[in-house]
Amino acid sequence: MHPPTGRPRPTAPARLALAALLVALPACGAGDGTLEEVDPGAAPAEPTYEEHIAPIMEDYCTACHAKDAGGEGGEVRYDTCEMVLRNWGSLVQTAFEEKTMPPPTAYTLPSADVLTLKRWKAGSHVCP
Ligand code: HEC
Image (cartoon, rainbow, N blue to C red):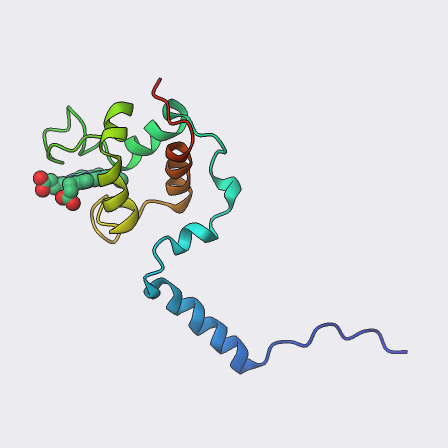
């Protein structure tokens, strides 16, 4: 008796097609495509403002969008919980959808952080 040979290996054309698909995906305008690939465990289940949201804003936004940022980011501020909630719509638009913030435009907020922000907003999102 021969041992089982296992699953047949994909043929070269099949592997090529798969590679082409993976390359093409981000160009499809799939919106949060990468967000679906992010490990759900990569973001806290119940994010809080002080522990999770404020550090993300500090890492990516408040250098330019804060009261003491010298007005670089205009009137838009993300340096307090109330400001994040008040400016939530513009945050989603620029950082999640258009991906124009933070500059330069090529730079995108990591998916795990986007998931954290979305979970916070979808959940209690109470300010301390
Ligand atoms: C390196 C500095 C810098 C960082 C970091 C930064 N921004 Fe900005 N942002 C700017 C500047 C400069 C403007 C343009 C202000 C103006 O035109 O009045 C701006 C404008 C905006 C606007 C106004 C709408 C628009 O498209 O012009 C929003 C909303 C915004 N930023 C959101 C964010 C968010 C959310 C983050 C973090 C994820 C972020 N920004 C990080 C510099 C920055």
